[in-house]
Image (tube, rainbow, N blue to C red; front, side):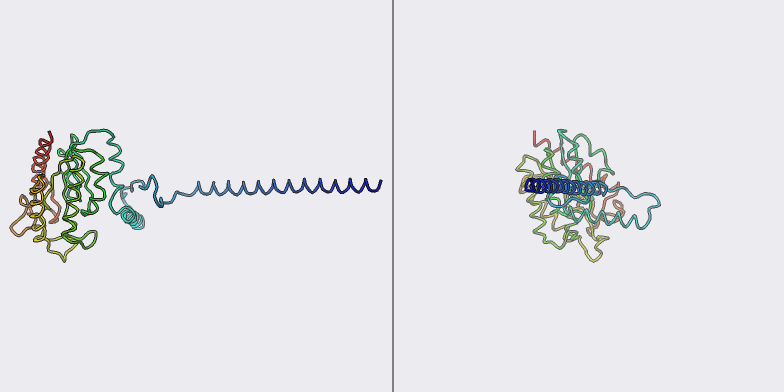
Length: 291
């Protein structure tokens, strides 16, 4: 009898320990679940950080415009955010991505790719940028940056013509010191890419300038003239369009005529009024050659 009672007692203790162990495991599982849920809540409550690595959506939302009465701290933060974007997107691939996607299957006649001289052109002469003529200028850019974005901002839009206007910022060294031959190679590469994809090419001469307000140590007039002579010869050799904006706007010493600019580099409304009919004629001629 004592043996039976002992066995029963041992069995009861085993059953009790098993129940305790199962309860402990259940509590541990519930605790881990609660911690994970709290961590997920905390992650959802925190603003998403900038994307890292190769991702499908690398472009941040557009920066807000400066507001009236903006504090110095807010202005500094906005400027730092803009600088960070430039560091993360050296070529400006994000700049026109949404606009390119919005075009969908809309037919594109011509794309103007360039720097601020191209970018500002649309506001000065909106009549040029309609009926399938698209502006893809980005201020301060150099030809290597344009080359990197040439596929998404030009080829992927399937235009019939591309107008390339580059060189001012190469001469200024905006993206670092560079050789004239590097600039020429970038022009060659963009031309090759366009022609390989059945796109006619128009190259614009570098507009005149005898000084850069952001590079006061440089005197660029002679070098701009040399590069324009090469651009003209290159266009003739390749059978592509060339627009001599330099000849149309330069003063005797190679400066942009003061009646056509406010800063010596960028055309104003009067300067664009000189450039626009020249560009339109070159684009129309290129379009006729495609028919």
